[in-house]
Image (cartoon, rainbow, N blue to C red):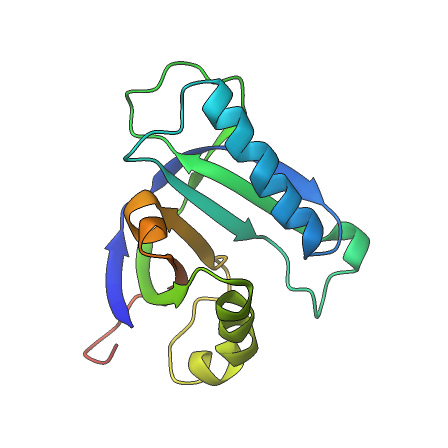
Length: 152
């Protein structure tokens, strides 16, 4: 785990509503096809997956999941809605980019989060940067409360 300070991120995104799982993977594939078709999938592209609702508190038919591409300013209009992801401090975990690696992260998250000052008002970001993917890795960015004095 590393601690990283992220600036606010502007993303262009697609959203689906429904239970998390296979539908999210399908949305990610559709999104990547859209990026390829519109010349937006490049060597420096970073894609985010963002689960916006806690499945323990939100009915399955209302769970929202966004996939977005981080906009760097060089892109032209891409025909997708855009929004800002709040920056701040994040605990970043490198995870094998496999179904098992991702499942293990989510399974272990309560134990991991118990040791961190997690900011539950911001979502966890799944970060897919090309260089990490080439190494069969992805990252999970867990938002942290701004520190008062010392500590994490």
